[in-house]
Length: 408
Image 1 (tube, helix red, strand yellow):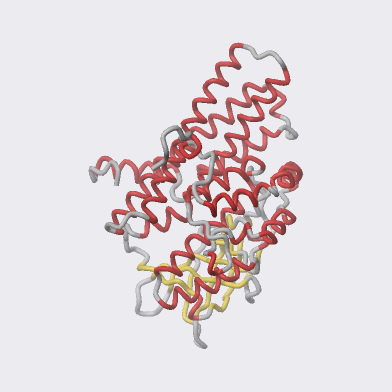
Image 2 (cartoon, helix red, strand yellow):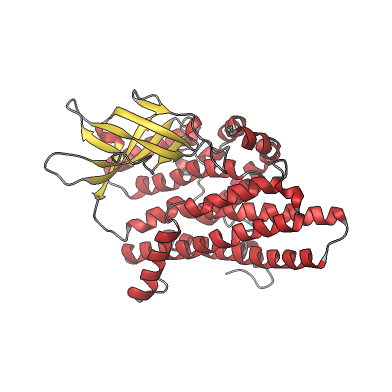
């Protein structure tokens, strides 16, 4: 328990890391913030991935931050601290933060497989984690199928292992990935389809990383498409899950861990918009009454945003590492807290940025103004899984009304 007199806002508002490993990560990130800011505008305009920034991340261990120390990483386990790290990067450039999220979240989920999976899962997870810890492996996760074609599939290879075919979209960080974790479904004669995640080297024959990202926002995130044409996958390089139609609330915990830290990205965008607006008004020297009212509302909304996200991440950390009860209850509680916070982030963050544009006026509408990039980037939050707005409404309302659960 904290001593009386300590400032509670440091943790309640996502201001300070909660663990030594989290402090070490934030310190390393601090060394790169100037470079991230310097190239953010031009990379956004060109839709160019920040290769030099990630080369620096790779050299000093940022890309291995969530790998256990015994496997060569920093050993950051706190979801709260990872969220704070992404928030800090997003204040400089949200595209860079979104790409970095790919690597950091994969370290967290692979660590769980290494600690709790069966022997095959542990071996595969350890191989990837050691590569990430040494800087040799950059792992991109691809979930969403592209277009209206058939789902990405794994079929048995006559010579052993699997054949992977499909097309994935919105694969952030793909331009520098050495490995891909590809969501797919197995297709085996006489067996029902199962969920799976295939690990594929970037050098695998039949795998093509396209250069086709041209998004409204997050333009420097490298969120390109991946084409997989009959790619061979060894038997031991697949994480097999349950049946496609099976429902297991325990799996909600893993889905939460994989995505909840992204809330920091959109909180960071809102913070950057607020800071730019306040500093601009200070330079102008005179603030009209209407602008003052919007600034006051922005302060209140940003406080609500930061404390909401901080609380959700604190809950996620407790349930991940301290809770010893029913895994299904853990999963439901984690996802419920995540989705409540995500719904608020996707409302508050865009409202904050929009009001900042109103306060600054027509100057903010120019492409060279930082607010124009923040306005486009913040809209990406509503498309992030799980869940998009309609599915989140369905999930939360069902949990609260139909099942009678209001907190797990």
